[in-house]
Image (cartoon, one colour):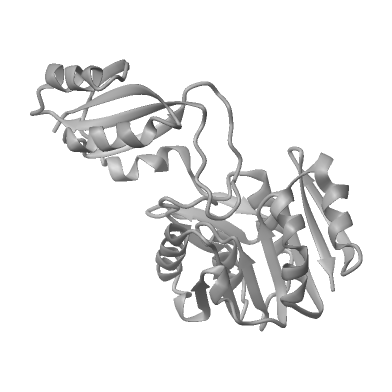
Length: 287
């Protein structure tokens, strides 16, 4: 089967209306890309930001009347940027072309579904990120994964606060953690985390919940890969979840923000390690 992709200009304010229109016109998928090379890094949990100017593409089956589709889009007040004919492909797996196996530290690998790693000593996380953030491709996540690979996690209880796709919590379990609580205020992230945990066979040791439902403390490790401002606002909460001598790992911090974040925690914990990558910082502290 051949397909037609129609790409339409939009803004973050008009996106919702355009998405509904494309689905109503029979699109089998709708994707969003940045129209002006303005990167958005991994957001705080629960947020799904859009760029100011975006391209929205609808994928349509070959039996559609494309002239009529474009006319309906224009009549609704949108501008068609371009359209193109596409051959048959497994579209639900197209993201794999941009996401291959990645190694973090000595043992840990994150691998898309359907791919394999040759290293016999590899500890593999099979991941399909779906609609949630966190695939390991961003420096903030890389730093956390590399730190996890360097730790002895056997018997440890871990809280992943702002879990996104679940990548950090699942990696901790694959590396030997006894129990992980994955916490996020985005229900879609929790769905993605559960699905990825089942793919990796760790669902029995994983607890998934919204922040209000988290009813444990005395964790050995708390990880929060968010952004500087929410990390500062949640300093008291995150530290309270740790047992004495437990480790706190905070990431999503620009190097220029590092001292600002540390100042919110310095009365409660002792910083023992700092890692930097591509202008981002990941800080380990001990209670």
